[in-house]
Length: 259
Image 1 (cartoon, rainbow, N blue to C red):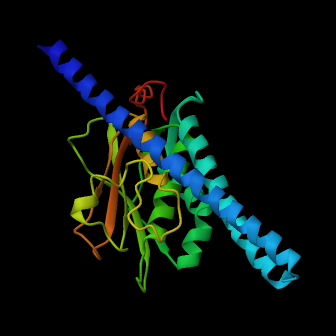
Image 2: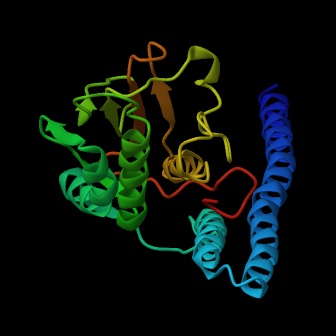
């Protein structure tokens, strides 16, 4: 009976990964093709404007091309990062989460400052066990995400802390809470999907939260979002092995470690 249960779970996981792969293939082809169409179109405009002596419009055309190539470069970089995560075998160590937050905050400072976001740490943070570089990346993605989705909040803020959770023995439960636009209940199960973007008007590739989920899962933890709905802010919660944990990194679904 236990073998049947494991087989059924493995089949469900495989079906989920196949569906994700199909979605991945479709969206990548679309998102990579779109900047190329833009570049091709504005190259035609540059040629036409140069021939007609409209050099004032050439700079505007070049700006559009630069923006398109920047987006393509960012998408490719995010895809490479997604594929590398967990495939570089770095030893896990006990890492004070306060240091992780400090490093991540420095890396996200541009996004935070642009929106005037205040970041506060609530109470002492635990020491966790994991890949320090990936944990910094996880917190940076969550801070960037919070800053991008502040909406019209006049006093944008993010709070980082830990929860007491006796049900997660050997793990620490952390959260990153914001007072931004919130997430409708209908979308909360999808925010960690590859390329899922709640608001197409907000810059980004839609890979940040998917990458964060892979980082958490391959540390043997889980990540979820809590939000009362639109305008109510969001809280991203996740678990990580506590300091001294002997647990090894869990392989990512689909094989090959983190994805």
